[in-house]
Amino acid sequence: MNEDLFIALYFEHKDRTGHDVLASHSVESLSTLRITCPVCLYLDKIRNTMTPELRLICLVCGKDLNRLAADLTTKPESDMWENALVDRITAGYGSKYDNSDFLVGLCDECIKDRISKGYLMEVPKE
Image 1 (tube, rainbow, N blue to C red):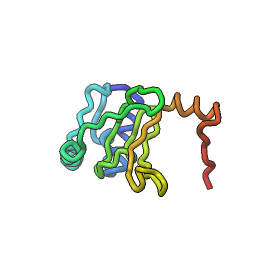
Image 2 (tube, one colour; image 1 turned 180 degrees about the horizontal axis):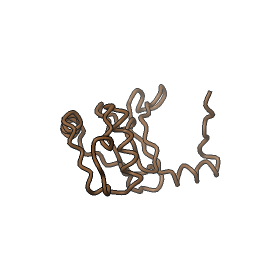
Image 3 (cartoon, rainbow, N blue to C red; image 1 turned 30 degrees about the vertical axis):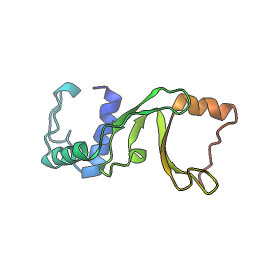
Image 4 (cartoon, one colour; image 1 turned 90 degrees about the vertical axis):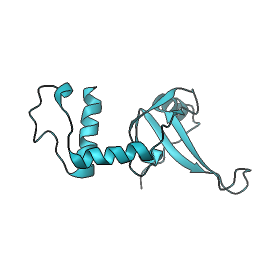
């Protein structure tokens, strides 16, 4: 497992459950770490049965988007995606898709490119 991915998953796990898997294990390397927390194993089992396999591609370039971790609520827009933005958008009045929801993904490379060309604008935080 990639060390950066492990660290991201470790902190997600700790935030989600309060369990610190490293505190109770001596870890020589990432490959020797096994998460055996019964609560986490149960939550993962639920997640695996509730979350269907989802494949998203970048709306602009068509590159596959990699889902790093899934939310128990099965909302892909709340999940962790590798170098990508994924969100749910709703078509408004006037569109033939009025009130329809869509899941949209953009890779970070295309976001950067579209911002530089003026096609996309980053909204400042209030």
